[in-house]
Length: 632
Image (cartoon, rainbow, N blue to C red):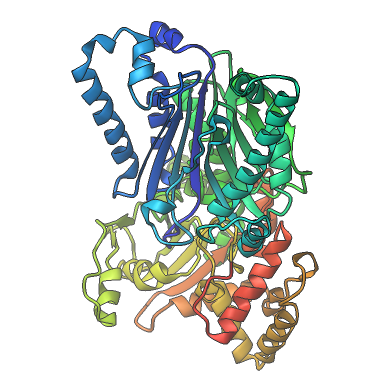
């Protein structure tokens, strides 16, 4: 994506189902779980580079022995820093006590981080500062083993204020108004209640306090706790939790907005935000990795029992389509084919923009995530060219000779890598004009491959703000002196803010919104802006379930092509010599390409939860009132 977006988070959970001695004997190390966690987190570093955290739990330890370990980092390379800290601590202990090496019980008793249950997290911060306090996993501590809660997640809640107020009404005093803290404290509240109720039951049955502890662990109903604590959640989430005695869960939102995959055999249970992470790290086939069902929790009890329990009634599945377009790694077999399909489906619009002249067109892409859709676009273009050749041969078969046939067959689709991302340049000069000149050199170009008679088609995975296109890419492409520059987005126009984890919180930052406003001004329709504001303002105190997204009216007077043409005009500077066109994927073709991920609210305004409509209206009111603030 040429416009940098911070986004998403990644979770990794590993539960070892066998004694540690089993892994020592079979794999040669009792640190098997830690090694797998490192690989799983590293394979998901694309999902977050602002911070990383790791937590482990040792099961069945004696009182007085530490059983929870946690380490977090917000350093420049947080995953490496986390595991450097872990390795340094392990090596320190092993140097002091080499006799532990072949004694698994002593390893477990004396070495931190070794255990049976692990949780890892990588993050980009979309809300709040990137302080160490914001890095997952979060820990809620207690002297009762069962009441310790470790939580990490990939989520954003639209109703943090409501969740905060719920905690206040429960008598709590939350330390901050952040979605992770409020969710953790709510789960923690009902965890406390459940543990205390089970303790009373054990007491009634005549069990001593010490005898009650393992009984509580056995009887603890994790699904019941999650059901009671999740009633008012509004957002997209995949959250993972560990309880101090060894239970674990991964819980997904009812619309399946945020992804979560799992694999289970007789040795391990493993969960990650992306399927190929599990496939690669554990060498398992595609069809063995399953999705955590929307609205359900994968629950792993201390005794190793694994179940999928419905927590909230699933709604229409609206899995985030940006996962397929951009966020998830393209090494997933389905995602790879879907991205190629996105490129193939947009070819007809590309052909129209270049007057079907593939002979005088060079196809390329913006590094690096658009490469797969580029392959799909080029394959479709090659099919078009082959059909053209076939038709010509059939129409001229009587006059074709060896020379003319060879000349015809030599015509190929021209592809070049013309955009090369340079080393990241530091904008150390604060003067605006100087900063703009620096931004213009983020990409370099390959000279000598474009003729003045050529069209240059560049495919990107999406266009959000358009800043890099305007300040860098189009200017750099124009230096190659093409006749026409066609920028192709494999995603539709991003018209609305996201509120479920992607850093697109403000309407005024979206180039499609800016283009629609400009069209309203030009056509004397700007009164629509005032009308939309009045309607949004009138709903300000409505319940979320009653709120309507009126911001869609901003786009209604115009076709998608009119908005695209205005975007092209806005992103072209006066000094650009080439004609500039911008093409976007249609929502209909997006759904054809990505049939399992139909979440499209940032394109259509069809939010999958009631809180989304409140957020988009609030974002519009912030724009109208000139407030530089987030809408949630």
